Image (tube, rainbow, N blue to C red):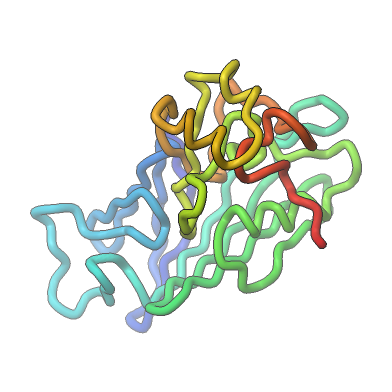
Length: 222
């Protein structure tokens, strides 16, 4: 995977700073006020070992950034009537000690498709955006891919807990239900960010075999 970098802003009680978020689809990195942070989820960004922040410079909870806001834009691939296009996804994440609040807005052809203002995770927020898109327009990211799933009966978290099965495509195409994913779990390639996309993307089927444990994307609302 090739690194991507996204320009944005970091804000807390001490001020606002321009930042650059960098990811390889798995690990996230960001430098704030000269201090490097990294993690596998947006709510797990801790100071890099050996470079601890000065006392009082940042609010930390469990060793990770909290009581702050991250805001950034990234190019997001979408399929429009089968043709690949680039949209822009605006992300606003409030990291709080209890639960994070996430808001996503997809900008495409002059229109904006928004999630709720306080989503709990990227999977839910991206599904909300997909439901608003016109017929024939599909997100082309890992959360919408035919080869991704979450571990059954586990909390999926804010981001980064999505398993990729691109190394076991044929086997995953036959999965349906919790037991099938558990049987295949040790063959996962690794974990990816929900907003990541790679060249091996295939659209997730709407029903039946190949929907694994988590089902279609997005799931139909009851």
